[in-house]
Every structure is written in structure tokens, then in C-alpha cells.
Image 1 (cartoon, rainbow, N blue to C red):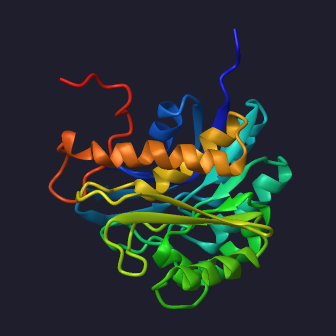
Image 2 (cartoon, rainbow, N blue to C red):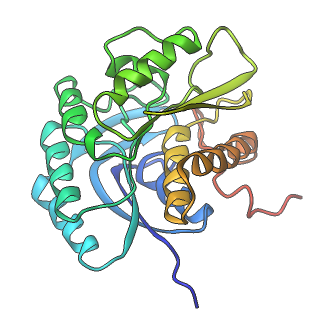
Image 3 (tube, rainbow, N blue to C red):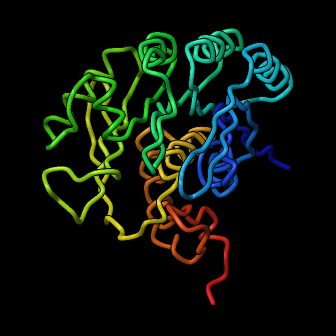
Length: 274
């Protein structure tokens, strides 16, 4: 009997089930790993948007981290929504304490529907405390612009420049996710850039016409975390996650959940097609 890889998500809860902790755990399971969780915030939200956020106290975040790392062999960690400076500092301290491996930081700043999820004064703390611990940072185009105090990248050169700026904050690599906007006016492709200190690589996929894209960023990052836990190299982990996510978006309309931005179909590869 082989042990299943254990992965951890540290993020906020999405009561609607499409993003955050819920999307992370679904992504872990869909990519054949065992998911554990540390909840940093509770949100009241559905497919239409967020109506309230309740932050979890720092001492309880620490208690969750200590409980998990003292017992489980965590092979990789996904860090998602951290809404306040105190939460960021607490999580970073816990990851250093337990010498966590394969940390992927997804700097969640706004929801698909445009609701803010992180305070302005917390962004600098995020870059200073967590980016140097990260194997990979995974902003989308809007987050990359905010992290570098720039405008939304209009072409691949501008996007590469923003990725370099983020890389200068200390992570081993940056994946800028291009699904939330077009680059160079190309409506047909969703293009992601993986940048390291020595190389860059583009990952392209068909852009799919659907409003059911809630949780795409969370889910892609979580799939990468699962693949790293299974022993894949970083570019291999990104490529496999991109393929899985593209199909999850392609089949999202089969679910028909909610009246706004519905979730992707995390378990598309497990459901029988009628």
C-alpha cells in the first residue's frame, strides 16, 4: 500500500463552494492527493459576490498550523487568501517554524466578481514575508499589475517585465495567469507565463466562452501544488495543471450552479458523460 501525497491549503473559506478552501480541496482530490486545510477567513458569498468577511484570529491560525504539521507529512503547501497583515505574518512564521516545502503563494486580491479580498496595507507585507519562502507565486494579470504598481499588461513584453518585478521579491519562480484578460488583443488564447531566474516558458490554451469561471485561479494553483507533491518538476506540474483546468472550464456549463459566476467542473474527469 502506497501513501497518498498530503497537501495543505492555507486560505479563506468560500461559502458558495466555488473558490478558496473549497476549490482547493476539490482540486487536490481531483488530482489524486489528500488535502488538509488551515482556514484564515470566513466569507459570506455566492456566485454573485461577497457580502461579508470574518477574519480568523491569529492564535487560532497558529493552532491549526501546529496541529497539522506536528502530525501530517505535508509535501506541498498552497497559500491563498490572507486578508490582513497580522494573518500574513502569522502564516509566514508558521511555515518557517515547520520548514514547509514546495510553497505556492496565490496572492488572492479580488474575486471573479470584483470584490476586494485583501487590505492595501497588507500587500507590502505579503511580498516581504511570504514571497521569499515561495517556490512559486501565481498572480493573475490584475494581481501582477497591483504587485508591481503598474497598469494591466497589454503585451507579452510588459507581462514579462511585471513577472521579473515580482521575481525580484524573492520567490524561486512566478506564474502570471492570463485567463482574466487578453494579451495583445488575442481573444482566442489564455496564456500563462512561467518565469524563473534562468528561463521563461509560455503555456497556452483555448479561451473558453463561459461565465462559469469562479475559482479558476485558486484551482490552477492548487492543481500545481498537488502535482509538486507527486514529484513533478515545476514546469511539468504547471503544464499538467493547465490541461486539467482547461477541461474543468470547458465542462463548467454542465453544472448550472447559481445565477452569477458559477464554479468550474473540478471532477470533470470522474463524472460519466450521458
